[in-house]
Amino acid sequence: MGLPEMLAFWETLETNVLKQRASKEDARTYKLLKKTLSQLSNDPRYPGLHTHEIDELTARYGEKVFQSYCENRNPRAMRIYWVYGPKKDYITVIALEPHPNDAKNNAYKKIRLSKMGEIED
Image (cartoon, rainbow, N blue to C red; front, side):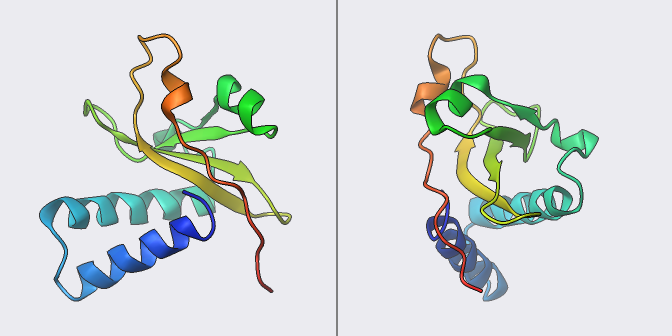
């Protein structure tokens, strides 16, 4: 998800959690995502994020695409895929997906990447 999809997803998730209407899974996702986005905004190279470029996605997207961990040691651990931009010192999340099965060929072809979109001033 990118802009505006990620923003809409985040706002819905946050609203449901704050109003105590979220499922256990959504509340867990919110907690993980909030922590990950905070770490990512402070330091994209924070060791716990295990941030690294995904060459296959970079080639497909036309810009360097990075993957950061939301969680680890879980078969369906969430990953955030992001790019720098569109402005200096900005990061745009272009996908939030479960970890693809790297053991299979073409695992990253299943990742749906959003366009970066425009940012309002």
